Image 1 (cartoon, one colour):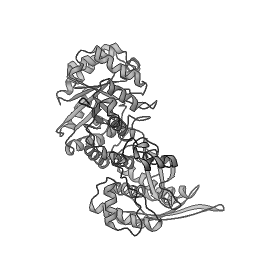
Image 2 (spheres, helix red, strand yellow):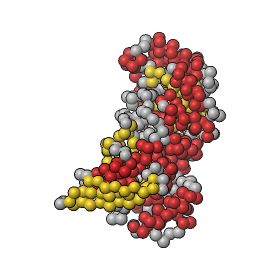
Image 3 (cartoon, one colour):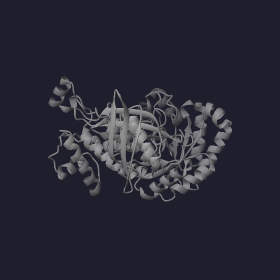
Image 4 (cartoon, rainbow, N blue to C red):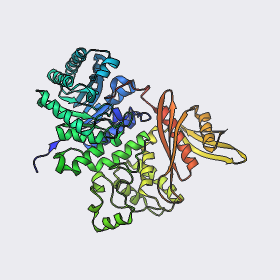
Length: 514
C-alpha cells in the first residue's frame, strides 16, 4: 500500500460541543476533558471562544498553560477585539492557533452581517493579517461555505491564504450538503484556487441531516487534510461529526481512504465516557463505535458466528477503542485489588484517594445487588470524577406517598460539615424531594427534562435518572444513580444544583456556529 496521508484531527468538544444546550462545563471539567484529549493524541484542541465570557477566557488560558504536545486553538470572529482576546488567552501555549471565522454565503452576508461581498473579503483579509501578529498559525473558516456561491468562495479562500492563513476551513455549518456534493466542492476549490497547495483544507460538518461523518469522509477522499469533530458528536443543534466514528472509519477502511490519523484509539472509549459524565448527555445504546451495544451480540446466529470467528460479526476489535474483552462480574466478596484492576482495565486513571472512595461505594452497591457489571463500575467512577463539583451532599432521604396520602419528602443535606433538614409536599414523591431540596439550598430550578433507565439488567439493576434544568437562561444536565429510583432522582437534582452553583461560564455564548 502507498504511503498513507496523515489527516489532522481538530477536536472542538470544548468549544462547539460545549455550546450545545445543557452541555456547559466549568473550569475543572474542561481541564479534565483537555487532559483526556491530550492522551488521545488529537492534533489540535479548540479550547473555547475567549471573547464569549470571562469563564471561557479563563478556561482557554488554563488549558494553554497546562496542555502540551498538541496545538491549542481559540475561536474569534473577524473582529480585532475577538482576536486580541484570543491572542491573550492563548499566549501561554507552546503551540497556539487563532481560529477566525466569517460568514460567506449570500443569506448570511445579507441578513446577518449586512455587508457586501467585497466588504466580507476585506474584513476577512484584515482579520487574518491581524491574527498573524499574535501567531503564525492562523485558521480561517468560511462560515456556511456549502451554501456559498462557488466562484465567490474560491475568491475568499484564495484571498485569506494570500493573507497568511495556514489552514482554511470549508464548513457545512447547517448540515445542508450531501457527501457527493461536498466531495465535488473540495475538488472544485483545488481546481479554482491556485495557492491551495500552501495551506491545509479543513472540514467542519454539522449533523442536521445525519450526514456529518459521511460528509467529512467524502471531503477527506477529495483531498481535505483536517477534520473538525467532537467526542460523541456533541455540538450545536443535531451535533457535529463524531470524532470516534471518523477515526475508526479511516482506520477500518484504510484500504479505501488510504489515510490515517495520530489518534491513540484505545483511549476513545474512556474519552467518550468522560464526556458523557461531565456533560450529563448519555450516549445512545446503539451509537456507532462507543454505544453500549456496539460490541454486544444477542442473536443466536450472531453468537454462533462470533464463537466460530469473531470477524464474522465484528469489523473492529473492542480492544481497539479501549473496551475490555472480558466481562468478569464483580461482587461483594471481591477485594480492593480486583476492583482497582477492573478500573484500570476500563481505561481510567484515578488517584489512590479516588480509588478508595469509589471502592467504598462499590462495596455498598455490592451489598444491594448480586452482580456488579462494568457499567456499574463506570457509573461509580463517573460519580467520583464529579465529586470536585459537590457543594451539597445527600445525607438522608425519606418519602411518603400513596393513593390516599399527600406525597411528602424529608431531606437531609450536608454542606461544609453542617447538616440541614427540611420537608415539603409535592405532586409526587420526586416533586416533593425537589421542593425540599429547593427549600434547603435556596435553588429553585425549572425542570425541563426527566429520563429514567435501567443501567444494567436484572431486578437489582441500578436506576439512572438524567435530568435537564434551566436557571437564568442556562440549561444544565445531571444524573443520579441508585438501586432506588427515588434516591436516584434526588441525586440527579442535587447534582444539577451543584452544577449551577459551580458553573464558571457566567452567561450564554454569543452565536459562534461554524
